[in-house]
Length: 557
Image (cartoon, rainbow, N blue to C red; front, side, top):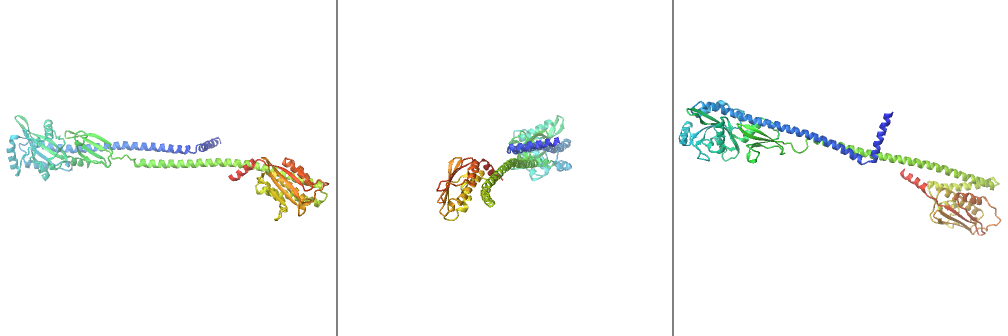
């Protein structure tokens, strides 16, 4: 039981908060859900970023491994050729063809333009060398000294397989005359291991400018003077083709791949694979290819836009936040309406109680008036018929005023309406004997009842003995405001029978001078001059506070 009371108390406090803060609570709920959603999206995006960085590392390692494998495969072939050619005095075209054929180059060697052989000769041996190679190959052969003729050593391309139009462009070209190639050959001779050159444009490219590189392996001959350089077995590579062949073995998705010979600068870029979306988020690693350091840059293709999961979470969170805010607003409005309804019920209950008390009071007053009328009528009448007629007329007058009050729902009633209801039987036709004049003045219900009884007694007396008993008689009734809380009603008869000085005081006189004066709380001036009865009534004009409350209740209902 105590737990239920605590729950109701908490529910009541929540409802009170909704009433006290009808805008702040829904906005607070929206902000709280939005903050939770933002935190969730941040966590998801953080996880996606870590995943993307891990994927970058994975792709970078995969591409670097593939490039390294391609370089090692080429280096192995070159080392095998160097071992063979060291054992022979002369590397002829047939021997070289058999060697290349025996290698049975498969897909692992893709990316290279082939395998070549270049003798190392002195400058004064060029003529004899050209004749010898032309004789061996049964074709024209000329040595192209290239960019410089001052070097004592020449390393012209002697053979290059496979024999293609592209490769034939390189035959006879002195590779030692070009500084980048010369530096690679000198390093290979010094280290006695396959060594890659820096960025060069292969002679095979002709008019093209696509960058490439060459891997050289020195071949020595044994002599009495010691080790003597015989020449170089080498493999030329188009860098772009080399990179694309390596990427075939890696899953790069839509990432960008760039290979640099040296620092990350545009002039050092030798091959690239464009990303699906350029993001600028790059992971850089070093790659060793044939004793030379290259830089591999892997660029993420993940756009700055939110991931699908984050977008779904954001949309769902904002939808839930908006829905909860709407529900809170509706709940706040309902709580406010419930509170207003409770206040209205309390007000209506208060009005109902007031109306019941007022009705009891008015019923008691009406019954008291009826009892007074019965008592006075009985004392002034000896005959039963006269008693019944007098009593009936006075009750009808009381009823007529009640009808007016009922039509106004027991609100205020105009003085003119009360008087007109009582003198209606005597004011019909165009030559009415009754004249009414006065402003619109509203009376409280009790005061209207008392005024109606007084006018009824005056009219009844006039009809029996006064101005209304003859055709020439005339009754003038006028009213006006005497003060802001008191109205004056004047009754004046004329043209009727002269008023007798020996008249007896009847019930009507007593009713007006005693009961009506008592109810109106002001004295009544009733005079009987010979020319006609004259009466002055002072009627209170009361405050309308209670009736305004009733009117408000009707409007709210």
